[in-house]
Image 1 (tube, rainbow, N blue to C red):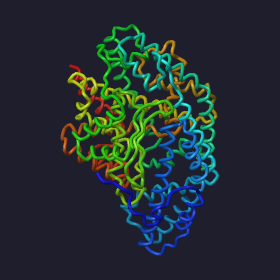
Image 2 (cartoon, rainbow, N blue to C red; image 1 turned 45 degrees about the horizontal axis):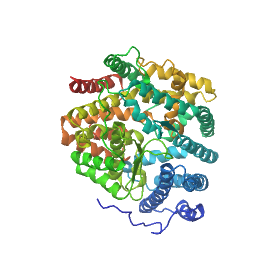
Image 3 (spheres, one colour; image 1 turned 90 degrees about the vertical axis):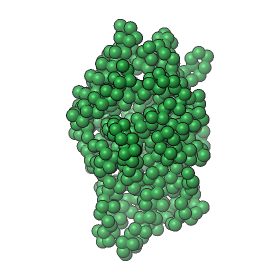
Image 4 (cartoon, helix red, strand yellow; image 1 turned 180 degrees about the vertical axis):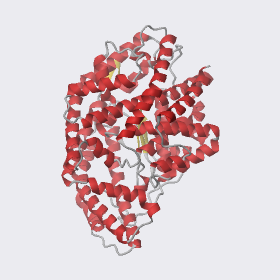
Length: 570
């Protein structure tokens, strides 16, 4: 696939972002524009979109380089320079441009069907913008960066080797229970070494975020974030309904799976270090050797599903837009970062050679395909899909791509085990999502809580949604601090319930794919091509599925996965 940056119309072809003084004239031009017709307005929108694409891509590369090597002080300084010296200046200009857009639309109305979703979001941005929040957002972004830096330095030494926690987690699949326990304890000890530092960091973030909400006229940060994230299609009460559906439908199912695991392992107590090992004592699945091998196998896997999917990953490989291996000094987690101007995103992850890494690659690969399918949309705003849609793309790809997993050197039995792991994970995700979301709702609706109260709330919520069959006796301290490993809580608050909604949608999408492969793929791509030009419910409907999280719907999808698991295991 040939890909290159489009020819610029508003900015000089050789323009690069260096400092605010270099950017300011372009924001001044757009903010002071005189719009006399619908044609003027559309031209202005295109110019604004071009500027947004260039600036966001510059920011993206600063973030990517910093997370790929958190030890590089130049990369860190470059990222923080943007956060502290450029971004704060952009916010008031964005507010001015938003107001100009709304005023101009009232005089020269844009196509309602085409621009409805975009204008709806712009009006909400105007409603919640407060200039006094600009320095607070800068401080929040600076503090959130510290979380990645702290986690990137977490290692243990085992078997004479220093290993990242991602690499060390491979030992939790070892058939030798003593090895599993020893490594688990080392990981816990290392995480707990930074417990106080992370608790203090998070308390600062909570206080700042609450002040942002108060400044914007909200009672709490939860309600502010629902507005900020543009959650027009559901409410906090709907999230509570999702929590309850998961508690009633999924938690008992996962408890039954845990009981089955305990019996298969012949244990009197199922401990946290017993959850990843094969119950029949079979060797750990090793689907690839390193990041290069994972890339090539990922491309081959996608090729078996759809040639376009493979072309997307191949293009990223050629552009060197992949950094997959885990290493010391690299930030935790994984992401697909859209690059708005060129259109080919960047995938970052911490592969350590296990089945979870395969799942992460196809997940981020789904995001990447989404980026490619929307790269030629008219406005940058149309490409900024809400997370409920973005995660539908990635989670559906996890399941659809299973048809190509045989390229990962699995024999028949290993492939069966890999698919069982994926299906278990697709349901196990739901209680964890409910846990994290309910915890965040508690945090920000109780903004003056103490660290001790926060810990107690986490434990109570954790116990309500996670497998009661797992015995945490002796591991109480780690369980109480286990939320520290979830980077979303620190870096992107409230970006998590989307995984739950999208997981339900992904199961439905896979069900349709299994019933009619060609139609299922076409529906999937048709939904993704919409970007954010339609409301969430309409996008899901285009994909042939429902945006639904009722008890009945969750039961229906659980039953489908349960049947598929039964067919594989019997």
